[in-house]
Image (cartoon, rainbow, N blue to C red; front, side, top):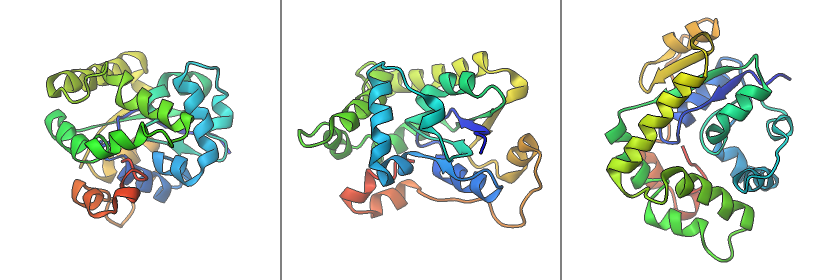
Amino acid sequence: MSFDIIGAGFGRTGTLSLKGALEQLGFGPCYHMMEVFKNPEFMKYWGAAARGEEVDWQEVVKGYRSGVDWPLSTYYAELAETFPEAKVILSVRDPQGWFKSLHATIFAAENQARFQEADTPQDMRDMGRRIMIDTFDGKNDDEAHAIAVFNKHIEEVKRTIPAERLLVYEVGSGWEPLCTFLDVSVPDTPYPSVNSTKDFKEKSPGAASEDLK
């Protein structure tokens, strides 16, 4: 099985819906943070990557045809180099809406604390630190700074990935741009829409951190 699609977008940019869309189009299974929590043995790779250790990216995504969301998107450049034929999808959304959604869900205080609890496995703590702290220079609660990091990431992906290999996918764009980019037919079913902030909040506290869109 080849790894065909690399998602470079941050969490809370419609990545769980995108996962469902890619799987519906035949590019599944699709890696997502949900897969890490479903398969605890995967955590060792992300802990190692967070510590700057060498990681076998082919082993990390073995058995998957695509991948989106954190932590995978943090390493989009390494994956793009490892899989030079894979296409890259950069999911984006309104920055202010993204920040609001992020801090109502993944980066809510209770979730940030959970990743740093003493009984949390070290690999998970290191992965959480890489996403929640290191990515945002320790200032993920500073809206202006977090949005600047978000925008810088978008520009960096656009600068480093050749245009013919990249789709900048705006949340809410539906099937057409995605199917055109992937050269597949548009389904006759609605584009998936899952894991809204409301959906996230309605889950139990334990489940919420297991579905980091």
